[in-house]
Image 1 (cartoon, rainbow, N blue to C red):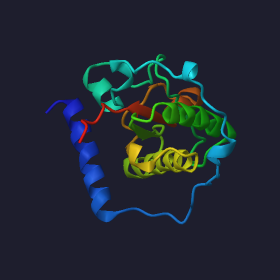
Image 2: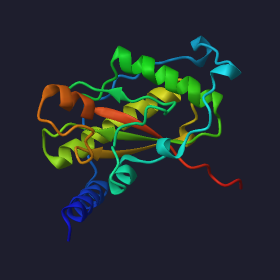
Image 3: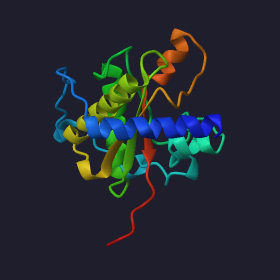
Length: 189
């Protein structure tokens, strides 16, 4: 079994264990109400073009293809970042989420998966749980902003799919993120 196969197998084994065992925390993310009425209107000319193939690949798919797990620069949805061992949304993260939310409102058929990521510090299981809380915090914010919950899903990769592999604070900050992946269009029912 290759090292890559071992990592992927171990990651999914952890996810399966966590889904059975569950994980809870008394800490609650800060939920900020963003009334849609106060959100700036999005004009048709602000709507980004249809996403390219590179904006619809998950971090795992990118890794499997030997590509970077970073969000492509041409993605209309931007990453948000977190402080160490935190999943609450900073003012900067909220501003980015508002911009992402405006784009999602202007593109109502778009479905997005939010990937929660962590830096390399801490146990794998802990980081998978923390990544899940980060992704859920972004989803909750977008829902309060007026994006329908059924268009949003979450997944956590913990520390397993870093953007940067150096052992420094600057690198770790890049890895503590939520990445927004545009999902393929669903067939009409």
